Image 1 (cartoon, helix red, strand yellow):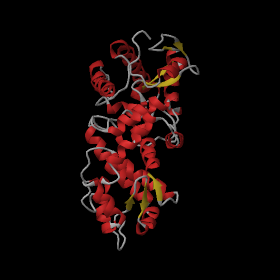
Image 2: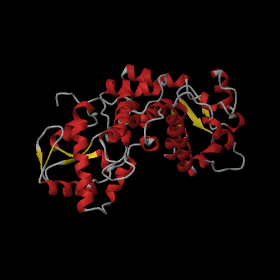
Image 3: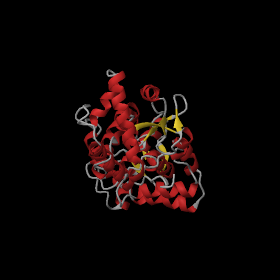
Length: 347
């Protein structure tokens, strides 16, 4: 992915910022700067930028449980600040930023200020030797090699020659940053699906109307089904469409991972993982019944195609317990390793 060129600006040096990264700091630092410049700021508080770094990474860490790597202090800071500031997992970015930019909590301030010794000067490494922090501050204030900002104790000042470029190309620059961040996190999470869609909080989940219609057909043919979690009887109109493996991990609504469930239980399950020893057998039997019924009464239903990501074909000889378990079990294991909790066995 190439960045837009502009005469007189060393765009190749900006592109080189992410060539060698051992943590996520540079990605979130640059995203934070772009957001502030878009709002017209050219002298930007460092603490505001650090607060923005936390708010940008909040959902990826707390909701999707994507690992930044064991040595990454940003992930640790997000997790610690969530507890200290008593912020919710689904808090929006503006709420998080407002809380952190005005906090007086010493623990939170310590978490934020850690990044002052890590990212502001190191980001400028393509422009000059930035390992020496004092020299980096001196060079930056002279805008050496047309670096994008000058460093001061409590703030940065955007180089005037960069302001228009950053504003005009903010969308492309963010995409470039997210693209590089995706590559970095995919290497840290090789078995986690759909990393790109776990970098920002979605404005809203898609409707499950078609999936509900699918299960309405199945339940209509059977008369009712039992909730695999509560054993309560479910009929058309009194159930929730539930992700067996949490959406926060799989990031899709494929029908092979969706089942009808007791509405009140679905609300309390949240993003908990199913205990396969208890729940996989009834899950499999319910899905197998659905495949058999839909192939008989609605063979052209497009959601049947979702099962082809699990089975080579929908012939009865290919729909088997072990094949399905081979799809589900590794996903549950990886999700657990990434921090997703299991349902209590007694539920």
